[in-house]
Length: 163
Image 1 (cartoon, one colour):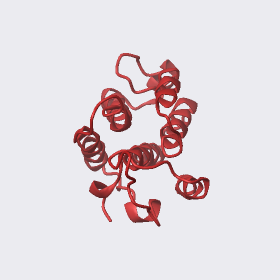
Image 2: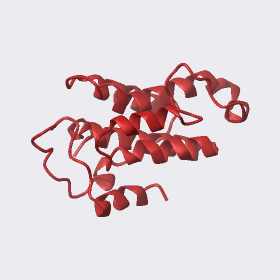
Image 3: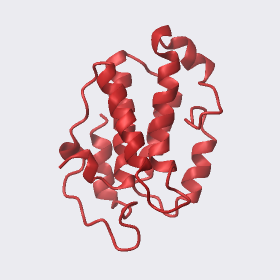
């Protein structure tokens, strides 16, 4: 299995894992990152997604582009990645946000590819898709691109990869 086979929900969770992996590799720790990762993962189980979108906008680190990084996070980042880190977070958030209110496009995949390029550029290994998304179910009939919400058991498995 590869990342091009993922639903938008799964791509969003995979993007969260990319953020987690990058921060762990670079020794970056901040409560706003932890909250954003938790939020991004919740897309796997929430429906409808309008509330998910509203909750994300209220986060201290929300990746919406118009809000600056929290000052305490900004000051902690090595200067050479500050600007790029903000774009990295925006690309990850846009994976799930880009098709939320319209028809299915290739935008989620485009943002995922930018996320993966960032990892590659900074020498961080990509997460293993097969390890994270075991026992996948069919995409669903109502919204095959978005994918069906995950069961609690499957969601717990995905979250376990972050430990």
